[in-house]
Length: 478
Figure 1 (cartoon, rainbow, N blue to C red):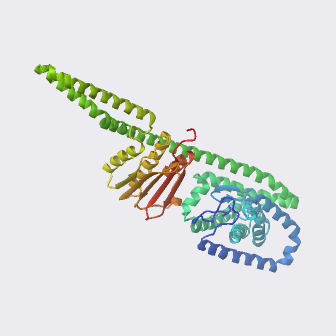
Figure 2: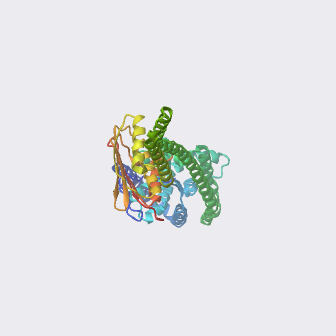
């Protein structure tokens, strides 16, 4: 496993095409150099002290180095920038055959990260990755030799090899957890959970089986010499396919779960929208249709009273009033039906519907909502989208930010409409949002961008939140 992930994106991200590595936190840089310097110094001292003994092995070690480097150029992604280095069984096999310092040299010089070639990691980060792998391999080699391990001593070698693999894994995971903690503030449990994909038993079983292949590789090397190293490619290729397919299945399962959660969230919002549509229609009937109908009722009572009292001459004045009231009610009904057909938000359009929404939300919360809206016109589908974004933003400010004041501003800006929702709540850090559980911002952004608009969130802890959405007033088809 490679700690190819300990670079934090705590500040502004660089453009995608930039090859300049991002700035690392100071604590992480201190950790990297505090590991690199002792490891590199130890390996250099050991090489100089044992140079005469190591020199005859150079041709074979060059082959080992090449095989390790080639396999490391095909890492398997685990989580974020963490990867599984396929050179694991080869380095363990080298640790069973050679003393610890030699396998440390092979790991330090041969552990290759493709991002180093692309200049996507800093020098310290790349050297730290190599030092970490070297420490893990040396720990495994030291345990194997300290316990008197012999690859031909079956089945005892399986127990010794398992302990050596455990030492490698312990050192590796410890350093990964520490570095990731410094870079991203992730806990050890969170790192392990994401690395193993939530199924620790299956992951560690595969890891152990993959690592114990080192015993067979060491036997092949002792039997066939340097040519036996070419046989290492076979199990490594098979293992890579297994890990890659497992990763794909995990990603597909996560995608299905995320879509299911999003579908549930959308279904709940559709129910909310239908309830609000009924409120809008009810408001339209109450404000636009009931008054003229009530006038028809009153004039009908007047005509009835005229007939009951025998005041037939008064009918000449009252019946035209009744007819006018009937025509007014008929016109109000036609206007209401026309507006409901042409507007996705009801007879009042976007501005009146936002006012209705604010009145409804203020009844159920202690927040004060300050509304500054003007008639912006625009296509019905764009008005509906602006309403949905405003409603979601206001509800988030009430529910999650515990805001006391919320400002909603809607205005026309040239060919666009500009919506701003601002609150004085507790705020949040956009990088800390759990996208597996909360989809509000993601859904709003996707809706706005699909309509050709621009969506922006300005937020920080304890400093409130400002949401800005700029939408084209008319759709492309109009």
